Each structure stands twice: as C-alpha cells, then as structure tokens.
Amino acid sequence: MKNTPFLLFFFMICICRSQDLSTLYETVNPAVVVIFTQEAKLQSNAGITKTVTSEGLGSGFMVSDSEIITASHVVDAAEQLRVRFLDGTIISAKVISTFKTADVALIKLDIPKKDAVTVSFGDSDQVKIGEQVFVVGAPFGYSHSLSSGYVSGIIKNKQGNNPFTQAEFIQTDAAINTGNSGGPMLNMKGEVIGVVSQILTKSGGFEGIGFAATANITKNLIANHRTPWLGFDAYPLTGKMKRLFNVPQNSGLLVQRVVFGSTLYKMGLQGGDTEVIIDGQKLIIGGDIILAFNDIEFDLTDESLLELGELAKNLKPSDPFEIKVLRNGAIMVIKR
Image (cartoon, rainbow, N blue to C red; front, side, top):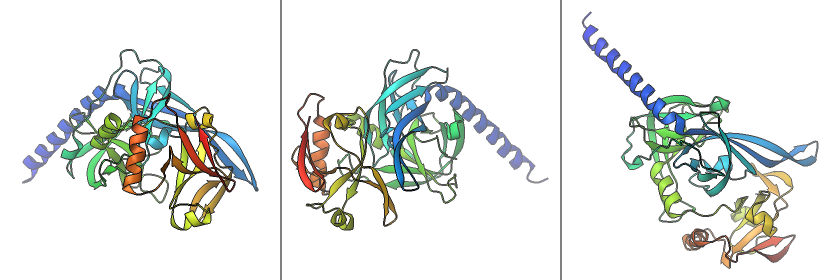
C-alpha cells in the first residue's frame, strides 16, 4: 500500500498524544475537586409556591491549599458548600467572590487541605483556534472524568476595567455536561487556560459547543477586583421591565433570592416569593428593587458601574454600608 508509511506515522502520533494526555491527566487530576451545593429555591405546583432545598453539583480546581476557582453560577446562591477531593476528603467551604458576567468565582475551604495539589494558569491570549485542549470535572456526578477536543472559537468582550462587564470565553468541542461547570480547561502543557462555564444546547445535553471563561480574565478579576460576595441573586430592570415595575430611575435590580446568613440577609434585604414569566423570562417577583449602593445609583452606564466596582473592591467587612431599595411602592434605606 502506497500510504502505509503515512498511516504508520499518523498512528504513532496518535499514540504519543494519548500517552501525553494520560500523563497530564494524572498530574492535574488531584487538583480537581467536586463541589456539592445546597440552596433554597421556589417551587410552584397547582398555584401554590413554597421554598424547597435544592442540591447542586459542580467542579473546581485548587490554586492554593485553601482557595478554589469555580464557576459563579455553581456557587453564587449557595447556602452550603462541600468540597470533595480525589482522596475522598470532604471539607466545607464559603464563597469569597463571584463575577456573574465572566462566570467565575473564588471559594475558600474552612480548613486548608493537607498535601494540596494545585494547578497553574497559562496565558489564554496565546490560545489558538485548532489547539487541542482537555477538560476534567464531574459530568452528571461522574467525578474526575476527562474529555478532550479542540478550541473552535474565541469570544472576546473585554470592556475596559469594569469588573461587572468583563467577559471572554474559549469555545470548544470537548464534551461538557451538567457537573462540569467550574472545572478546568487545560492546554497540552497542563496549564489552566479556562474555567468551564456553559454549553449551547437544544436537547439539554452536550451538542458540540461549550464555553470556558478565559484564564486571563479569571486571573485579573480574582487578583485585582476581588469583590466581596454579598449573597444575593438579582435581575436588572431596564426599558420595558423598568416601566412594568415602576422603577423611579433609569434602571434597578430586582432581587430574586437572598442567601440565608449572608451579609445582605443580615441587613434585611428581601427576595421574591412568586415565580412569573414575563416576555419569556422567568422571574421571581415580590422582592426588593435595589436603586443604589452607598448613594451610588444603580445605572448601567460605564461610569456608574465603575464606581460600584471600586466600592465593592474596597469594601471591608466592618465598613458602614447602605442600600436604597423600592419595597411595596415605597423607597427606604437599609443599613449595615
């Protein structure tokens, strides 16, 4: 056969790559963790709405003996966090900082992990379309599962220094499913180049397009904009939504949920109690609408968001803090 030498060469390359991937997996796998969450959710049935405890699952990776990077949507409404390691150890944790737009978060173990294995970040600006990558996580609870593929696109949306609008994602065909969120996407050097975020799907399962927040955005936000986690979930009200809710300014934040025991819970911020669908968007209504933080009006202009970013970055646990809200048609201020 004329193509025999070429086929043999191609076969040998595939074997070498498989061996490299196995070695890399064994190196980084102990740094990957499974994150179990508990959060309160509203459940509606036959017109009756009640609060139930919901369990969630995600992945993450160690960057120190006590700090773990994961996806924001895995932990931002969690009332309890437990982290399970490859050796079976389980340690509780708390959320330190979350960035919803970028979909990255930092959590901290209640006690450091003995003999912790960590991974390092690579330079995601050097990632090229067509580059081979691999993902380690817990799809559907199958912990420390590996999938591999290639970079199929890069989505850049850097908007200045505003931590609330920065986002940048690597697109991949590596299989990503429920439970993978927050796990590392790695290059063939074993460096983290992304934090697994989400998939595009019509069936609910993986269909070949997944995304990971880039390492460089993650490093910048965690290192330079470590905003404190306040413990609430909210939806921005603008345009038609703003008018429907009678917001007396350009925009507001409709509070969906407030995490039990969090800073804002202790301040008395109130979440919603009724699920509705407005223009195809599922919302929880009945809660506070945030108008301002420390007299900085919530406005989706760059200037306002930069001010809020600076406030959050410099806010200390003991600093005075107040929020202006619209509650039951009246404007009031709640303070810490």
